[in-house]
Length: 92
Image (cartoon, rainbow, N blue to C red; front, top):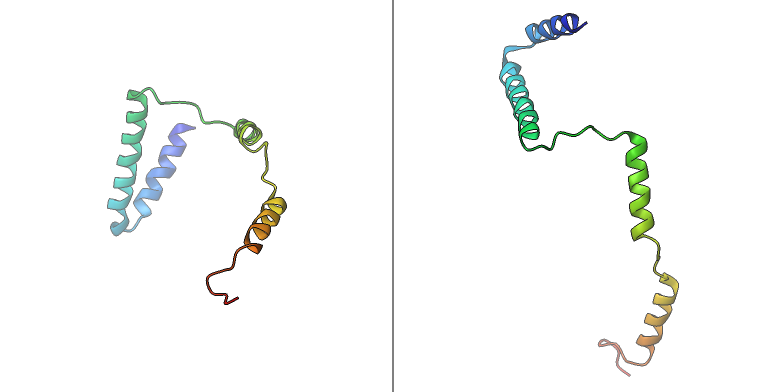
């Protein structure tokens, strides 16, 4: 199975135009460097599944979005506060 994947990859590389080979090489070098850095820093971890990420986001939303601001009362208070003082462009 792995040999087949490698053979397919080699064939794809062979079919690339010459001007893309350097870009591919840079990408592969960067990918390998990132993987090595993660292992050395101890940051290599298993990717979260969709369900785990969704659960984490729901927990964060429940923690930080429990109180929603009352926009209607805010606008009512703002309107009332502007009624008792003239605006700069008004000539009363």
